[in-house]
Image (cartoon, rainbow, N blue to C red; front, top):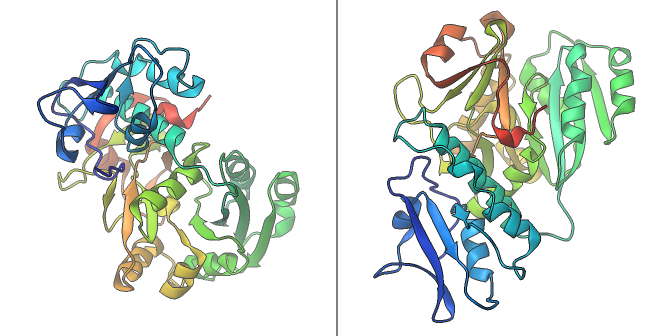
Length: 360
């Protein structure tokens, strides 16, 4: 059975099962080998190590598919990184209760993502990702460039569109950045979508990705998007806008449903991803025709145009991303803070992202 993280179940229906080395293969303990649906329904697999060294290919395939794996200990022949991950049982400290508010499911998904990263195929030369960012807020540029420079497992460059901002106001931040940064000044009256297009015209990477200047991105954000593109085969990938920091309230929320009540799930093909995380190949971007020349709803209309051009859009996990929300008039996506509080599955005082953000 070929298994990928596609279809990962956020809330499992069953507990742990055992993974055994039997008959020269790794098998799930039971009368029959489980199919994908049965594996996804499990909280995870408890590894029972054999008395002597065994090949780990089967274990790594399950890890690459995001199946949560655990063990109370690991023999000396298990590679140190894998041993450390599977014996870290902190994610099991919370008991699931079957609700969207359950922190146990969040900890389980974080563990799953760490396993995927460990087991993902390694490429000798990482692709070059062009990070396209338009800004009219020079005070955010230094922190945004710092988050891009923090990215692991990829080569990155920045294509910066200065929207009514003179370069001298961000010169120090650009010159201090460890990455190549190209930039273009665009008049304040030019629509936001056109600013993005002029920035994208400077890009030389294999992939383009959109980056919002005021949001937070974990250090594996770009690598996770590339990984999702590889295992899904999608043309466009992005993440769930699951975590939001409501700045005026000093409140972090996590949403797992849309306002309609429909589940807001990840690891699925969908028509919606967080706009500040859109990634696709540069060739596909050009085929779609770039960003729509609009001042608002640029992300939504771009995704609509991508679908009309036959592109498949995939939504991966959102645990390495946090949207910042101020008052509604500060955003092109104009919704009041009360809307986000209403759809929150979890609320925490202060800045409380997923552990995968590795935030101080």
